[in-house]
Image (tube, rainbow, N blue to C red; front, side):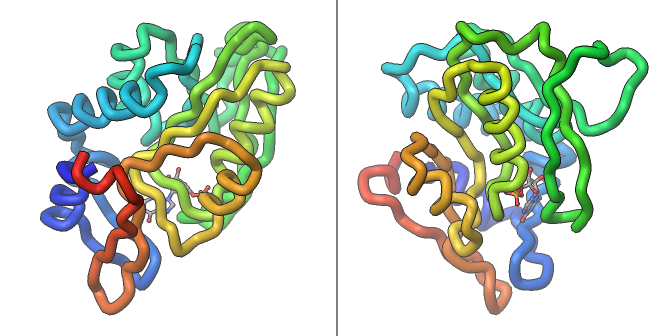
Length: 197
Ligand code: 5GP
C-alpha cells in the first residue's frame, strides 16, 4: 500500500537491524486518516469473504482493528495479555513469546466471544516471527471457529512468520512488507499487483 510505504519512509525509525519504530502513526500516536485508508484496504483484500468477527491482541492491534471493523460491520475481540479480575473464568488461552520484549506471556480470550459458527479475520500491527499470530490462531482453533485470513499492517519479510503462514495455506494480507532494515535503510518487498494500491 503506497500511502503506508510513504509514511513508513517519512516517519519510521530503525532500531538495530530488525526493529522498525512507527510510534508517530501506529504504535503510540495514531494517524486516524491513514488507519482509515488501511481499514478500507483490508476490506478490499477480503471483500469476498464471510467474516463475522475480527480478532486481535492488545494493545497495538486494537486501533487498526476497530477502524477496519467499521468496513466489515463486525465486532472486534482482543486477546488480553494481562490477568484481570474482570476477565471471565472460562477462557481460551495460548502461550506467546514476545519478539520485542523477549519473554513469554499467556494470551486469553473469554469463551463467550468466540463461537464455532464464527468466521474470524485476525488483524495485527506487525508480523515478525509470527508468535502473536500463532497464539491467536491457536485460540481460534480451540474455539472451533473458522479462520478466514490474517491482515497485517507491517510484515517484516526477513523474519519467518509470513512464510510459515503462507506455506500453511492461510490468506495473509500485509499492507507493507519490509525486505530489509539493514544499513539504516528501509527496503520494501514489492508484491506483484499490490505496489501501486
Ligand atoms: P511476532 O509475534 O510476529 O514475532 O512479533 C509481532 C509482535 O511483536 C507485534 O504484535 C508487535 O507488537 C511486535 N513487533 C515485532 N517486530 C516489531 C517491530 O519491528 N516494530 C514494532 N513496533 N513492533 C514489533
